[in-house]
Image (cartoon, rainbow, N blue to C red; front, top):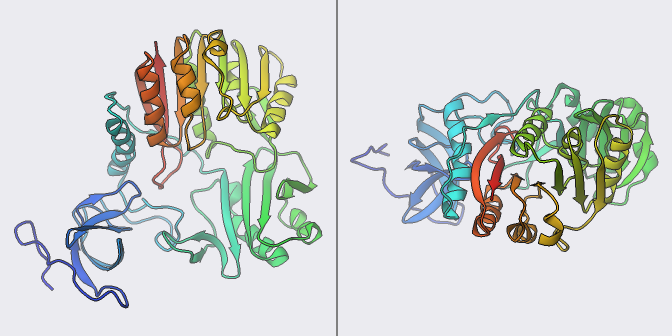
Length: 418
């Protein structure tokens, strides 16, 4: 088949759908938000993982999904992935993209979300927050092995180790295989802490805790839990947040990398500079609250009872901190009202991926002079930002932070002022 060029494009893909389309030549025109190359097939957009704009490739197509067979003409921005599992493993999507284009792509995710919401604000360059690697990983443990599901498939790709994690998680795949041998199909969440690895097992069938117990000695785990129930604990898993040591609950949410937590906290503290009475909403175990309390009073709220308890305990055992009032509160159903918010001179909120629409509407009605929003989803950030802007706030700055290395996810921090 002819390769095609700018004046002589490759022929459209044609074929019968019975066993998939035959191999054909295609030109990748753009990179989609999920890191897939885009190609037009008879007027229909098709998504092809592992391809880059400007490449001429051989693919097969079924529906709106394409599968890369071979690269005829590679992009100048293509580099060799450093992980031998890249491709079949669905954990990473962007290891084949050079550093400059990678940074532009991630920054572009934020710019596009803001643009679609009608918000015109400059976006700062991407901040590298990979640090020593990811301190959290969740692996599927199945008969086929331990690893991640392939992109858009339910096929498990078995791995020996994940090179984007911290060295303390180098045995993650072996731990997951040990879990499968003990209880069968399960998901295994592992977190590297200052006192060792915290493991949480969620089995697909009713599992007996005693079958898992030997794993804690075998792998030197700090703690091993089955669901929300701790089976054994050699040492309480703790992480440092500012001057505080936080005893984290099983399966507790943490930022993906330690470096990202520090960078995000610094951006929050800079945005709230001068604020002496701050509300930290969706506070989790306190990565912002415990640092902000070094200089002023903090009200912290989250729906997670265990997280609030951990934050309170860390605050009570750390000298030199200003008062923290920590409250369990469902901010989706019961957001702080404008009247409640008006007593604060600064607010930070860091909601889950769904964003904080109800809380943003109350903040928009308040008189709080400065608000810092932290988000892992540019689209819901843009939605909430539009609400705040509609209420009289100005979006002063937006900083994207790259802690989800080689994925299509990006963290960001926005600073709003009245």
